[in-house]
Image (cartoon, rainbow, N blue to C red):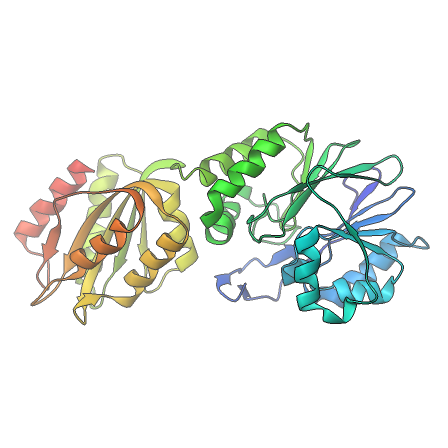
Length: 382
């Protein structure tokens, strides 16, 4: 597939993978994107995951024809992108590898056998590399989402090769809505590093970008302000939508029933509401939802004098991804010594700018009339 006359897509789709990074369900697969720039010095932009090395090299050979690559640019050393570097250099040993100092430090940790034979070009912030009629300019993007990450701007065709930024789950050939799986990808993988993403967006704002070529998902070549605005919202930890995320951890169904009733009460009031059973629904989607909405309600049964494990896991995920700037309400359940609200409050207090509503609903085993009145009041308060 041609991105432009001189830039060709050379990536591969992985439709067999079940868990991305061994933790995120990807029912629609994922793409490992690679690109070829044809010029006086033919340049390959990134390799692919080792799962698809053979397929990628076969496709690359067909794209290159009789030409040989002069440069290989390594934007990110994580194995889903740099996993085929050694195999690539075995096929094209004369290729010069372009990266920053940390790129080569990490690359040699994965492939120590390349120490003596890899031909390196070390670049730094703002440095350029001429390919002929195309010029690459490199910008460091540390912790988006590894320390060595860099993005590359091609000056003549105004293309940003954005590494993991602006990527999404799903294969390259999918035509589904970008934002849902891009949000889940961003929040769960890059979300902790919002400040660093903001720094990258400031660099990007100074460039005339017409096309964004990420390492996962589709090439973006229209309405770029929409995608950039989403990244600005996500990386500044602002709520994307006005609504309520209801996340519950229920053992025998009574806490779940409270969650369902509250959701109906909020919907009756016209509130956008999404509900997650933390014991059964996908955790990464629940985390995504928590960041998407401006308010959240947590409901948990007490378990062994603390939290039901899936709620504790959920809150740990939120803390790790720097959840902040939200309003949260608490509902607990306990047959003899309710402790869930106290435990949830302690975990929330360790996060930034979280407003916890004071009125906690405490259920003793099963819902009663007093609880129902309290749920109605909570819906009103929210």
